[in-house]
Image (tube, rainbow, N blue to C red):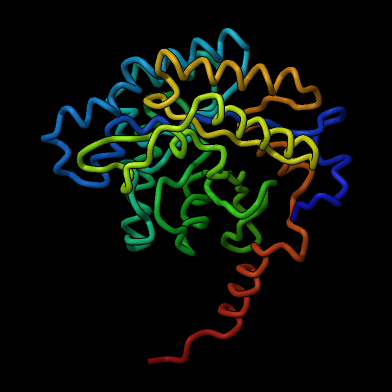
Length: 308
């Protein structure tokens, strides 16, 4: 666990105080269709999300190229099939790509078999467009069912960036002694919280108002300074339809400049962070809350259910 008093020397590469992962959730219209299939007939509403594929993604790629920033993009398999050229542009620019299932499924409402089928279909769709296996995953919505780490590991997935409640990578229990690394996220570092707004139907519910651009950037920089102070992992979540507009993409540029100018912070993809952490920190501290799941699994294995 992290705390203001915890020593962070040796946590990251020499001379690095904080790791910064700029990530992009590229869901396009799949986000609306996964929530309500009747959106198929609401072309104006779908255009809000399609904007990210048609305009926003390229603006973000231009910023990342201009600033020479490696990033990580997450997308469902359906988006890879619908926008293969955009996905290849992302990969050819040197960015890391993870997947989000096939159609942003809620795995806590599926059986283990149905979840495995959806995950396999999504991973295959993204891998087929990339021409190589995909290695990372980000949960779209819903809770994390107990079988999910095992299912992902079985598909060759080595890391996730899905959980909250932490600000450093940690290991989730899988089958046997295997572990799935998670690079946790934060609602405070998600552009949806500040900027996502729509009229009818309300998406998200509540019709929250758009924040001041300057105040949103200030909030992100406060979080950056805290991560630097405590030697943590700064994970920013962007969306092409939100921060790929003509005005807000400048926020991304300003945030990248603030990270680079602060000193002691290194940009990295989630693949790079996962590789570093798995090599240098192969196990959780025994007191980490994730170890509760390990103990619970062991107890279940040691005490099988009685015969029916």
